[in-house]
Image (cartoon, rainbow, N blue to C red; front, top):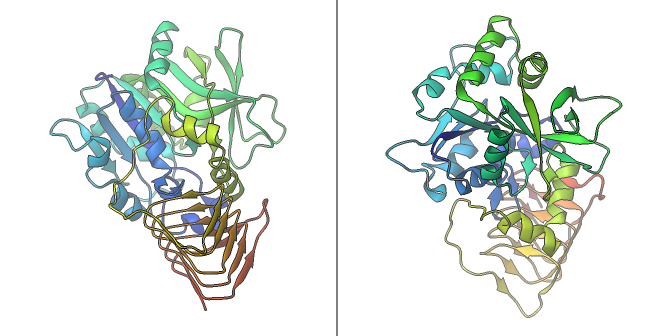
Length: 370
């Protein structure tokens, strides 16, 4: 895959994620005990042998830069190619910002890259995908653009979604963008393979017409003139489009078949390495069906929950169906159910926090509940 470059587009909607995207882009949202959402897309690219990855960011990207660093943990700290974080132009602010303008501002990155094929994705689709198979399919179909899609995703569709109309030979004949009444069950996974020259041409044409949206203005507008095909993905897919879907997808990790496929199926999922001691379980600890990262201290009960690194659960506390992010501290005799704690939250003893499966309670980063 030395002829392929990766593009990760972080111009993604974040309005439905509440406090979780208050200070970070969607790709930097913590997930699964030790990962960020961007890790899945990035690891899929690395496992396919892609050595040149550009990450296009809009705002609030300090946490993302801290997580990615030089790209060493993904093997991208290279003398040639490697990881490139491409921010927006600080001297120009469009009245109608969109991903077309974000990509177009860095056409020189595409021009200077030695690869001639582009894999472009977002970070809202959580899966373990073999891009080598998608590229082989792209060449077999002699496609100009290939879109990865998933059929039969459980509805209703949450947040923004793009649905594909397909012929029997997988040719894309129509694209529905956020339909009120969906007429298709083929969900675009926002993953595209195309020639680099074609991408640059489409971006330049759209900018000259004042257009802003990649799907609506580039793809849909040119669908009749291009050979666009869909690649059917058969594996597990988690779509992060809202707080509810984030919570539901996180809880699905507690199913062994899903977690094994997601983290090991087509390749490993890599993340920033942190040296933490093993989790310490006291005699009073009681843990059932949970995912617990290193560095935690558990004295109470943890049931059907995900604990990130360095979380402390006090004696007599009961954490159920919840997500506790890094370095959260839970005092003694607390009761949690359907709760999401962002990083560095401190909850004093005896507090009861209760959400619901459809509406989990979210506590913002560094909150102190005394």
